[in-house]
Image (cartoon, rainbow, N blue to C red; front, side, top):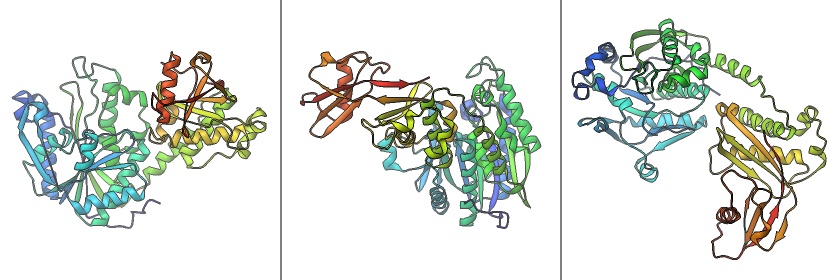
Length: 482
């Protein structure tokens, strides 16, 4: 349950700033070319003076760079963080800031309590995963200008995750909760550049949606209509190639239930990329919940079902959606009226459910033989497992649902074989066994054209060495795919 913040002190939450991060505006890098973005520099200098007036003890730096994961956010866990502009030819321009430990761990607790997917990146993990423990340019550029006016602050460094807007917004709420719990005066700095597709000679060329996206963002901040952030068409945001949305939505989430004053400081796009500076100031007044508005929009999305004719795929997809949305298993007794396939209730068999996203495998779990009372239960159970328990992938999230392709394979009984000549990669799947280990590979998989390759992969899945003696079985499947 999210906290009701309307009756709580907000004096230590000082608000947020939205800032861009083009390295070229750092004079040591721009070498005179920075004046082309003078409005952006002036805007950052104005924000720096604003921060000097507020004198925050901590700046929470939210960046779209650094260690960015598809399924969660990353917080750098260290006593101090440093970084430089070496990637832009100026390693001598550097910065080092202390990390505020009480707020760092308060944020960790809040996010853990809310089951937010989170990586607390320390030196050990960074070495293990070849990740970075340095300040990235998403933080360095705006802090470069802030430091010219005010330096008496510590930081918490957060890299965004590619999560659904609602999840990002709720993370912002939790950031605010942590700030209030520690009673440390704190400002949120949301770093991000708007469209990267404003000009043909820009980094991603020109797309008509680029200027359209920036016009929407500027209007939202000029008018303070933040609910419109969540109605920007997905194709517009994608074509704009922005790196700002996640940071901005997290910052806006910190104002849930609180009225705010917005000051749009500057906007320009001189190099084919949009740069916006803005200030968000919390007011001591209750506001309507923006989270409820987001949830109403999601409810509308959920009530727009994807038309699927195949009963088996429809059942698997319904099970996945029910679990991802509600964390509840689909009950066959409630679903059975929507299907006309009596076989689902009357027969038993092993089932594999495979999930792909944009042509890439996203999850696959199955059973060689029946483990439940009927096909329906087998499909439901394995669909949920493929979506949430495949150890190769993180659990599927709400924002992915509309992009998934689901396939259901119903396995025929297997038969033992003595040689590879009895296999056909298009027709038969294979099971290999040795000393209690078992590996299975389905038939007719993209990129697998040779029987030897099929068996080798099955061996690898089971952890069976090339020289170990195996027992082999073949089986056929009834495949349901679109």
